[in-house]
Image (cartoon, rainbow, N blue to C red; front, side, top):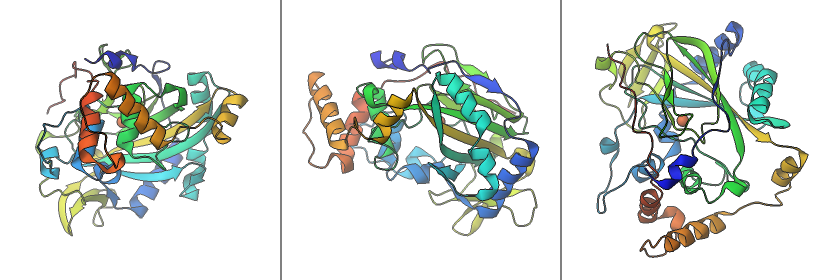
Amino acid sequence: MHELAKNFTPVAPPQIIENSYSDDQHSRLLKVVRENGPWPLILAENFKTPEEVIATTSGTLPEGVTLTWDMIGLNPVFRGYLARGGTCFYPEIEDCYYNSRYLDLVRGYWDCQYAEPETFLFNIQGPTPIGGPPHLDGTVFRGMTMENTPLWLLLTMAKSCLFNHWRSKKAQVISWYYKGQIGGGFNCWPDGPAGAPLQIQAPMWGRAVVVENEMMFHHGQATGPQSLRKPAGMDISSTFGADPNDPTGWQIETFGQINQHIPAEEMRFLVHWGARLFKDLGDFKRTYDHSDDISADQAINMLIGDMQTRGVQFEVPTDPLNDNNFVGLLARVYDIGGPQNIPADAVD
Ligand SMILES: [Fe+2]
């Protein structure tokens, strides 16, 4: 494992809570999901090319290999956004987002004076293979966020540990609703990638964990019957939505064809609530006054300088943000590895 990997431990151990949303909140959340779908694959939202996927998963790309979506494999996990920043997209779930209980939890988790809700999204799926190798969630930095920077660059910056001065303090409350009997839980490495994994096991209904997933390797467990985990005919454009012929069921659809029907009891629903923390008023002002921001140019130059210091041989790119060779190079140099002690898949 890379020397940098040992830096990846969360600010505090994960805290498990129950009844994360009330029954009423949960049914309103699910109603929003049924009525506003269908929803795209997670991969379709975050990545333009397969190379960018590799850059986020600590993988390496042999030189001269051109990746295709078929080679990557498309895990049938889908996502939708419920809120971003100060705006909740669905007024009927505003109480879930502007959530005093959660704000209090994350302030305590970080020992910070202030918190603001920042992200609210869900993952929805039927039976699926394990959620890829353990990974880190996208970090943001003062001046560089999901709004102006590709995810692969934010993750590379995080892995390099060169940018901690600008890194945001973040925490999440991740909730699960899954009644299935096979897998469907969560694996994480709160003591770092060399430490023992913590498994939060399904079935769970409104269990949640307070975490810092930007600094803790984690992934979803394989879920549901093995024979149903890889529906045939998937594409990057596949969607997940309510089954019009089943009032509680769901379906995966691709190019107008139904790939799979998913009964309610095999559906796994994850609600991700994320917040940004500020130690005190000075920290808050530094962020909102933009008095100490970093720019993409400065970040790229620091990465280039660091690679030169490390003795990496490469040609300095003219358009680094859109250069797949450069993206691949960064992925190799800052391939910090990840946990090797991955618990075995749940099987039926
Ligand atoms: Fe994640």
